[in-house]
Image (cartoon, rainbow, N blue to C red; front, side):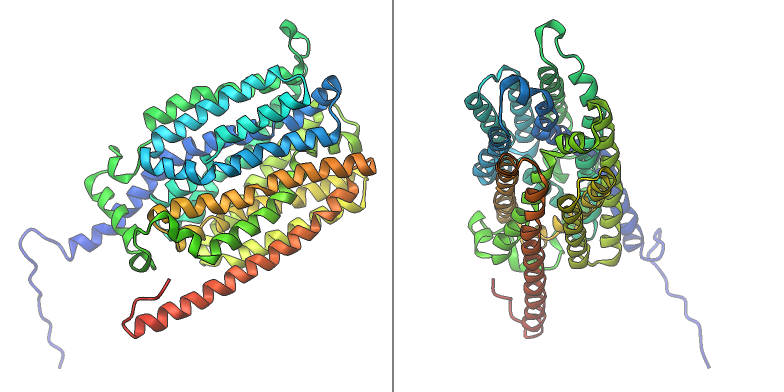
Length: 460
């Protein structure tokens, strides 16, 4: 016979109040972090991307007026990434030392001023120098943001968080495309060419936003006045409880370079960026070549592609977090990118080129949320700052190779088709590298479980 017993709770308390409220505290903390941080960070990255690639629109006038060949333009466009890569790791380590608020604001101020100063360019050497300085100024901004978000969002929330801020990447193309035509049409006003108006007006927002970063961005959860004490404690505790935290702890910067996944992820992004930046800097010229449309119409097409990319990024990031799966959410978009480049490389018909650009845009944008959840899963503390910067440093070198290669091929063959088709090769390599990373991670997870069952700390 079953008897009922009344369990007496301490006076004034309901059933397990601490655990009952913990989930609500966590939801509140993440909601506040999302609302307060992601729009501001996304706006900053969107402006960064515009200032990085707005020369693709400026080239529609600049190359003709300054007598730049496709090779000169491609080399100048790519030199940005050499300086950027060289300063990635020291910049991210400096962010850890002085705090995200001051360092990210400094980055924005300097790149905005240099971007505006690009209106003084007249010769290839001045173009090369300006692009190098712009890359040096912006170095560390993106990996700094990825590291910063890893201090706020637990692993299960990072793909959505990255997708929500990184959506600024495709949306910046939308904004840039929408305004580029109008700015280029200011050609001759107050003695400035249209391309000069474009570079000046798109550099100004970075200078203004640097002050907002300095005033509004907290260095971390502990210093966020808009979190309650319980919310701060929840964020810190959840990050400490993540799998691998006990094994990795707060290792020094050198730890990052001992894990082969750092080099493999860097190689993956290198191959990916050869493709993405290879077509990004020629997209307006390619569209004008096949459609014979005005700069305003070309800008609107680029703007529409940005909206498509934003939708792909959000949906894939959301589904990756919901399912907990990363590998297929990365490999699938890489294969989609291959199809897009094949379409661009085999036809000059406007309908096929536009369809291929849509496919390419979907593939490239979709994979970023899942990709950038990988480094914080095996790196912590200073090793995370150094490792994320090293991954991006290796990868961003593809941004030099892609535009320079496309410039050489365009001058050599008289068009873009063959160059675009050759980019399929690095994407095949990227698919292979992400597969190796996935298999390595599975093997490490099995070793972790075995060593944990034996009561030993996993090596490495």
